[in-house]
Length: 189
Image 1 (cartoon, rainbow, N blue to C red):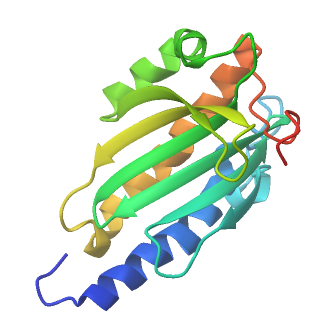
Image 2 (cartoon, rainbow, N blue to C red):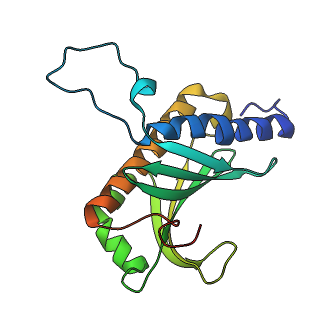
């Protein structure tokens, strides 16, 4: 960020990334691939994206919560952006057979890929945000962008795309392992 930018401008750009860029990008978590037996057509990602995205954000806050419906499942994700530091938190409903250690083992292949891309991954068990009876497994993903992130369109494209891909493969790997991600199915929503 340039030294002449004001705090208000940095907050505006952070909010724009969280409430405009990310919700739009997250629709591409799930998309239809063109078939090989069809002639190539001028299809854009916007034409074939299938994920549905809802989000919640409080003006002035440096985070937003997204609810992503894709791959016949639903995932709650929180994204925190502190100027150039990211924290992505995936919240998975816990049950008697699923705790943080069990989820970490099942998603080990996903973790290796995310860490290769520069994320630091952690797992913990947590109570619901509004209801202590709800139990979640939270997967924390930490990363730092360049200090000029809010001014750098290429950095924004990189991190937007990386968060979408990381979320896509989190959901696909959970599906492969038979882990339901939906807080709605767990009766939490």
